[in-house]
Length: 77
Image 1 (tube, rainbow, N blue to C red):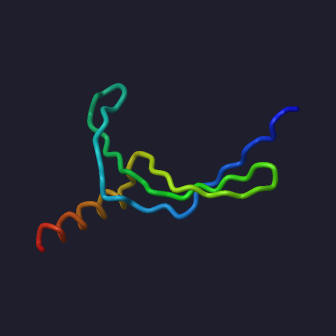
Image 2: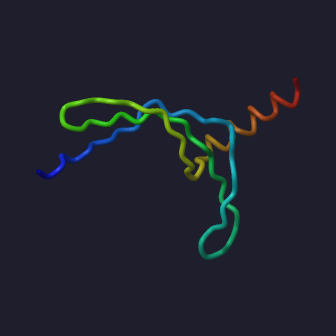
């Protein structure tokens, strides 16, 4: 019997505070990436389960500002 497809939805994203840089493909300029903590809800065969996960993605301008502000608060303490 063939397995039923798994449908996955990511909910509840938040920044973990970790970041890294990756080289851009053609120019090799650095691109800021942030680590995102999220909960992934999966539906398979009418059963719902959720699991926490982390992944990296390119930062938006808002996320980059938020990381800098949070780092500034930590240095001031």
